[in-house]
Length: 372
Ligand SMILES: *Cc1c(COP(=O)(O)O)cnc(C)c1O
Image (cartoon, rainbow, N blue to C red; front, side, top):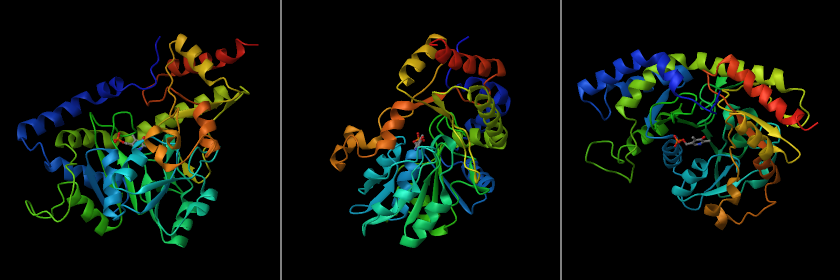
């Protein structure tokens, strides 16, 4: 039995009839760009998050880009963020002309370490951009406190954390803007690219709304340079079907995480993920640390057993060539560097069968006990 790290096809089968009905309705109506399903999805997603405004766009990357633009962050400005994330986070900062300033992560949460943020604040700092990595919420209490004290904006990268909460509040609605991705592997995935921003601030929402369609409030009247970044009507139609299932899918992920934790807690060279009492993870990934230099060996052994795993991310962003100009070097951000050698994400998707889960944990155990 081959167990992939992620599988979209089983979920599709479970909702195929509904999805196909919605997609056909869009095709028949012909409103392929900004059809009524787009607004309908924005309304329903805003209700789900319990936030005043949701504006959809073409991807999670564009959501970050649009959020920064809406906050008028640009050349000369600094944005504090984590180096242990997907490139899109800093890509967006760089594209608007601002400078990412990296703060190392916490070894237990893999998220930005709030204790280290204040030391990196300068007069150029405009915002903090925390990433809820693997679905685990950042310590938003600490981050918001620092932001208020220094009058900084907070942009949450929720690409991996749709449905996660901090102190009972959905991530993405705690800072000034929350940025979501509907890439197929995310918790709420569409059948292509898609994204959205969430905000309680109607001014930010209004700016994102016209920036995503070429920067003009009135058609063919353009106030500033915008983007072509609309959510396809077809994708909105898919998301309308999927949104009502999100909580149950996230709960299924949570049950898989519980099972993995119960089966792997005895292995001394594995550090299992924990979630802070205040938080609820969306479990986009179940990521363990394999310590004592064994990660690559374990990944290879699992592959031989047919268990697919992933390394998110093998190179922290401060060591990526694209960011060489920022002046970081090996040793600048030691926890992120350590994690890049230790993290291993096990198969995680709501439809992962109990028999497959058992094979995963048995294969992981064998990868260690075979040595003894
Ligand atoms: C996926 C992802 C993004 C970008 O989302 P896209 O929809 O693929 O553009 C941004 N940040 C993080 C942390 C992600 O995982």
